[in-house]
Every structure is written in C-alpha cells, then in structure tokens.
Length: 71
Image (cartoon, helix red, strand yellow):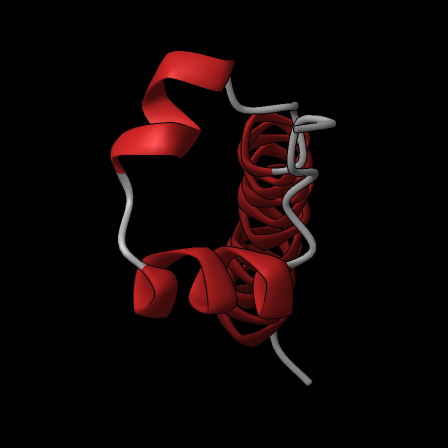
C-alpha cells in the first residue's frame, strides 16, 4: 500500500469514529429527555384538574401510568 492509501484509510476510520461517537451522544441525550418526560407524565395530577376530566381522559391517563389523586 502506498502512502496516500494509508492516509485515506486513516481518514475514513477517523470519520467513522466521529460518527459513532456523535450517535452515542445523541442516544444519551434522547434517553435523558425520555426519562424526564416520563417523570413528568407520572407526576400526580392536581385535584382540580382531575375533577374536570371526563372518564375517557382518566382511563387514558391511567393506562399511561399517571397517578390519580386520592378523591
């Protein structure tokens, strides 16, 4: 292999390493966002909001795992 082929191969390897590291960073950030969103969804709903919901909305939230207030 000549020198230019080695340089080209090293460049391709560096580009691939950069892409993989960027994908890992994006995955970690998405996981944090999803975890934060789930914790918001599972937070208890205030009584006044819960009382204004119809039965279908309450069932949907119950399926999602949202805590209902003790009525």
